[in-house]
Length: 97
Image (tube, rainbow, N blue to C red; front, side):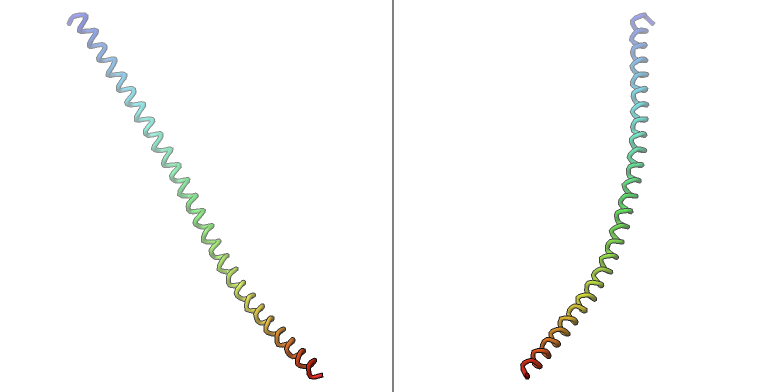
C-alpha cells in the first residue's frame, strides 16, 4: 500500500471509531433517558393513586356530610312546624280572651 492509501485507510478507521464511540454514547444516553422516564412514570403513577385515594375519601366524607345535612334539615323543618303550631295556639288563646 502506498502512503496515501494508508493515510486514507487510517482516516476511515479513525472516522469509524469516532462514529462507533458516538453511537455508544448515544445508546448510553438513550438508556439513561429511558430509565429516568420509567422512574418518573412510577412517581406519577404513585401520585395519581394517592390523588385517587384522597378523592375517594373526600367523596365518602361528602356523603356523610350530606346525610347529616339532610337529618338537620328535617329537624329544622320539624322545629319550624312545632313553633308555628305553638304560635298559632298562643294567638288563638289570646284572641279568645
